[in-house]
Image (cartoon, rainbow, N blue to C red; front, side):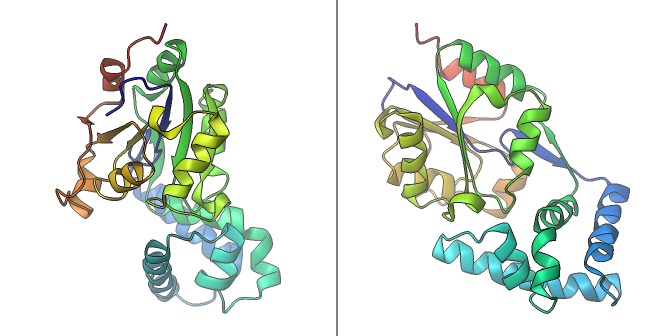
Length: 243
């Protein structure tokens, strides 16, 4: 473990932001998506079909570590039976509505203050996230007033690679101008995030112990983090002022 960390990269989902279930919000998203594409079947039939395609896509992308662009996701994988010329211009909105089916995404209560303090302490900050959306994370950063604190943002939907491919970590390190051994990564997946960070040769890995993630993908014991935290603000106990 390298203690001379200069750059800290963070995941977003379940690390900096969480999902709150809001039935009315979720139902509105499902209805709006169907209206947008002009679906004629029942809601149950439509989502049963698209959900099956989604699961097939996720399985393939996790195996190949390749992420489709938003446009390809909808025109080739999720709605191939709809005219591509109609679906392609809608891809950004469709992705946002698809994700809203899960609930409303909000920042953790201590995320912004921690980001600001880490920046004040002299660390370069960046984001590395597996995500199907190209706009949601930048829009959140802008609305929450944290865009200026992140020197680079690497999204799988934009670069076409997924964690744990080490190249996505190396890409981030190159962009921020810090050698991997002087970089740290903070993520919530006990397998994928730890494995990718180790393969990339990062100097430190911090696991955010999020119950929802741990229930879906329990630790295997093969890859271990350097630290485990339950609150974003605990990063301030790990990273002292650099100056």
